[in-house]
Length: 462
Image 1: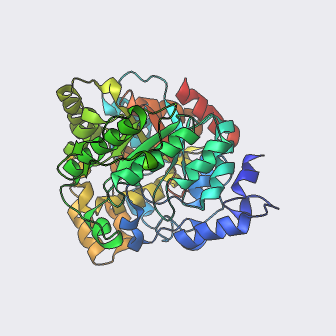
Image 2 (image 1 turned 135 degrees about the vertical axis):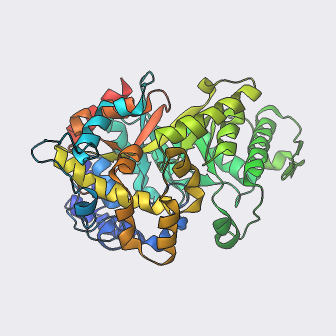
Image 3 (image 1 turned 45 degrees about the vertical axis):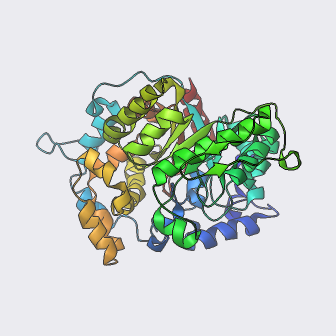
C-alpha cells in the first residue's frame, strides 16, 4: 500500500476511497481542533510528556503532502509575528555584515554546526516514527508503512488513547520494528499491572518491546487520575525496581519479595503467575526534565526519552552530566543508556520553506517556555523570557506569546535545514548525545516527498 493510501486511515483528504478514512481522520480532528492541526492552549498539560501531534505532522513525517492551512499550531494566523521577529530577513540570500543577528546569518551559521562548538562523533542513528493520537487499530497500517519506509522503531504516546493497545496491532503488522511507549504514565498503574502488560507485549512482539515510563505532573496524577502524588523521582525509582522484581519472579520462580519505600510486593501464587517468556529482559526507558531523573536513567535504566523542548546547552549542562554521574554510581557507563528524542524539524525544498516552518516551532516554544516545569531548559540555555511568557499565559495572551521568542531560540531548539541537508544537520547538532531520533514537524504546512524522506532516514542510519 502506498504512503498516500496509509494516510487515508488518518486523513480523509490524503487518499480517496479509504473505507475508514472518515472514522479515523474525523476523530483526530475532533481531538486536535479545527483543521486537524490546531492545538488549543487549554490542552497544554493534558498532552503529558510530549505534547500533541497533528494530521499535518503525520503528513510531513510520512512524506505525504500536508493540507495547506493558514492557521498555526495554536490556531492563530501564521506569520503575524514574522515581520517583527524576522525584520532583517536577507533578500536573495544576502546578509548584511552590520546585521549579525539577521535570520539568514543565524540560519546559515546554524546549518554548518559551528555555532554549537565542537561537534561530537556522529555515528549511525536509529530513526523512529511516533504514532499520533488516534484509534489503536490505525497503528497496523501506519506501522507497516513505517517499516517499508525504513524506520527502526514505532512509539506510542499516552494522550487521548491507551499507549499499549496500538503496539499490539503494530507488533503483528510490522515484525521488523522495535516498539515502545513514549511514554506511559507510571503512577496511575500498579507496578503489577504495568509488569503484566509489558510481559504480554514482550511475548507478542518477540522481545521488541521497550517500556517507556514518565511521572506526569501533580495536577494530572491527583485530579485526572485520582492517584497519590509525592516524591515522583524516588517513587519512579522504586517503581522500576518493583517491576524487575516481579519479572524475575515470573521468569525464574524467585520468591516475590520487594520491600521498597513506596511499593511492597510479597505474594505471587501459581494461578496468577504467567510463567517465563523467551525474551524476559524488557528494556526500561524513562522521560524527565531535570537532574534527578537524568541521574536515575544513568543508574538503573536502559534508555532516556529527552523531551523535544531542549537545547544542546541543556543536554550538555544538565542531562548528560547527571546521567553520567548516575551511571558511575552504579558501575555503569553511558553506553548502557540509549538516549532518544523527537526533533523539531524545520525543513523543505528551499530556504523560504525552512523559514515558514519556523513559525509553528516558535509558537510551540512559547508554549513550553511559559510552563514552570521547563524552567531548567531556559536556565541552561541562557533565556530570560520564561517569566514573561508565563505571565502572558495567565492573562490569556496566547496569540502574542510567539512574538517574545527570538530567532536564535528557535534555531537552538529545532533543527533547520533544507531537506537535502537535514540528516547532516541533525548529526551535527547531536553528535553522540542521542542514539535515536524522531521527526517533530509541529504542524508546519511544508510537505516532504517520500523519496526525500527515505533518503534522510537512510543517511541518519549510516
